[in-house]
Amino acid sequence: MYGLNLDWEIEPGPRTCTLEDYKGAEARWCPGCGDHAVLNAVHRLARDERWPTERTVVVSGIGCSSRFPHYMSTYGFHGLHGRALPVACGIRSRRPDLDVIVITGDGDCCAIGTAHWIHAIRYNMNLTVLLLDNNIYGLTKSQTSPTTRFGEKSNTHPKGSFFASLNPISVTLGIPNASFVAQTIDWNPPHLYATIKAAHRHQGTSFVRILQRCPHFTPHVFAPAQQDLNQVLLMTHAEGIQLEEPARKLFPNCVEHDPRDLAAARRLADREDVYPVGLFYRKEGALRYDEHTATGIDFTPQQKLDALNRILDRFRI
Ligand code: SF4
Image 1 (cartoon, rainbow, N blue to C red):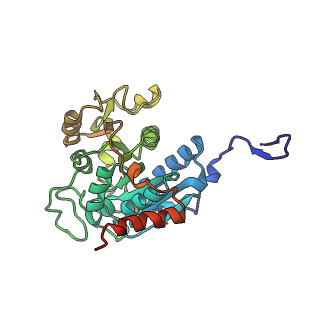
Image 2 (image 1 turned 90 degrees about the vertical axis):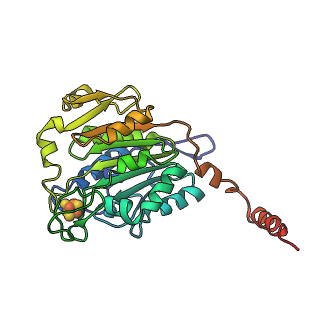
Image 3 (image 1 turned 90 degrees about the horizontal axis):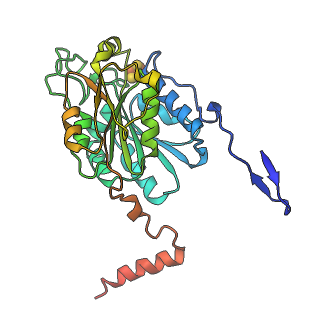
């Protein structure tokens, strides 16, 4: 796909992308794990939207889902437990030309990484954050996580968790400057794909909680919702996540919800009788901290030195 102009310079043609361009190592998750579905959706979206691999970074913390960067042929950072978001914010601050995708889990984001989660949402840098929530610590073989439901048994609570679980959507909707908050399920590929696509196109931090099956440790958690379609509530709206009609028919239980209505979003997020899926809330034009941290990014070394000296001169006695 290359052409030559009269000066004999090579002009690159449109980029041709295949799934193979984005696939990394072979995924080592358990058979039937919902992480495979999310990886598949991201591979397909990357191909369809022609993500430049050399300008894409996938950042993760620790957990089953955090193996994600190994399975992408992009740049990646498999970091420390709970620290995916500060790493992503750091990359975004100094390399605004890069597309940053964050993969985190319920243990990673909602326990050890909670402070980072709250402030990353508040900073609203241009990041796509996918929270793969399987309600359990899977990598370390079944311990209660912050989203484990009351009464669920695990190695740390063999008689059942006695804490009220944390709802990541309700928490995120309570953080000032949140600009995109959505929820989807790994077992409906069209909705999963459409939600990640909308999140990726959003300018600001898009936070997507993906209800993720863990057939190894918690096969019973989402099985009822898979079998009874009425347990999933599809939020529909012209400003929300758009589905083709055949895919929409898989959701018999629907509600019209305007994602600009924060109070209604909070009421829906708090519902415990169904799993609401779709876009809870979007605010266009919210302040983005990365637009401020990018100041001076194009300075020469001498300009940086001069700027530093000007600041130090303020403290001269
Ligand atoms: Fe997936 Fe659960 Fe296996 Fe981890 S333990 S890879 S979350 S099925």
